[in-house]
Image (cartoon, rainbow, N blue to C red; front, side, top):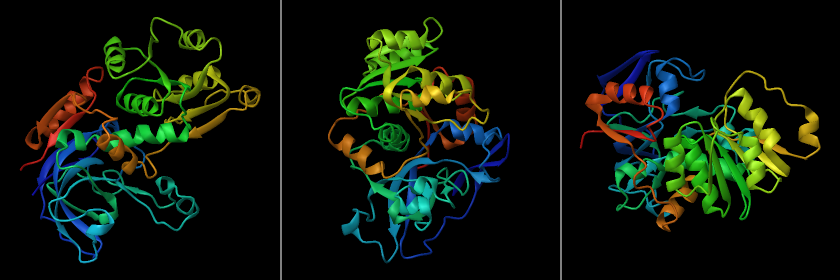
Length: 344
C-alpha cells in the first residue's frame, strides 16, 4: 500500500508498506478515503513541531471505511461493523493518570497523537482502536466526513469557553480553526465577531454566519469590539491568531466575568498584568485537541446544524501529495482545507 511520510524535516515522500493487520480484539482495520492537511502537518514537514518524531506517516484528520473488525468489537456499542463509514479520533491516552480521570484524555501524561507521536492516516489502510472510530452517515461525502476532526477543535474551544446563548464571542483569526470555533459558537446561540488581516477570509466568515467582521489591518480590534458590545467587551475571546500580542489583546478586550480561550503553543512569554485578570475576574484557559467532541459534532451534522459543503478548497490524489503541501504552504490566505484522496 502507499503511504505519505515525512522522513526528516523538509523531506516528504510517498513510500510502500505492507497492509497492517489487526493485532488485538478491540482493533479495526480501516481503508482510508480522505486525509486533511492541517497547519500542524506543515509544521511537522518544516521541523517546527516540537512533539513530532521522525520518520512519521503524517495525518491526524482522516476518514474511511471499516474493512475488518477485531473479535471483541461489538456493533451494538457504536455501530462499528464491516462497511461502516467512520472518522477517526487521532489521540491515544492511558485512561489512568490524573488528567484522564478528570475526563481530559487530551492532556494525558502519556498522550500520543496520530501523525505526530505515532503514525497517522496518510496510508491506504490503518489499524486503530475501535473506540477511536466514530460512525458517520453513509450519505455524508468523504470530503465532508474528514472535516469533523478540525470542527472538534472548534467545538473544544467553545466548550472550554463555556459559550452560552446571547454571549458576544470574539474569534481572533479567520483561518480554518477560527472558522470552526466561529460556527460552533453560533450553534451555541452566541453573537460572533471575527477578526483577521485578510479581506477574503473575513468575507468567507461572513458567508458562514459571522455577525460582525473586523479587518485588523484597518481597524483597532479592541475599540471596534467595545463599540459593537456597547462598551462591555467580548464575553468570550478565542485566540486563534496565537501570537504574543493576540494573547495580551484577548485579556484586554474580554469583559468582566468573561473567558479567554488560548489555542497557542507560542513559547514567548506575554506581558499581562495580574490586575487586568483579577479586576475582571477573568477565566483564562487553554484548549488543546478535544475531549469527547466527536459525538457532539457528528450530532450537529445529523441535525443539519453544521453545513460543511464548500469548506474544502482543493482535493489532490496521493500521487500529488508534495504539490498539495506546497500549495497549502504558499497559499495561506486562500486555503481553508486541502485534502488528499487515497486510491479507491
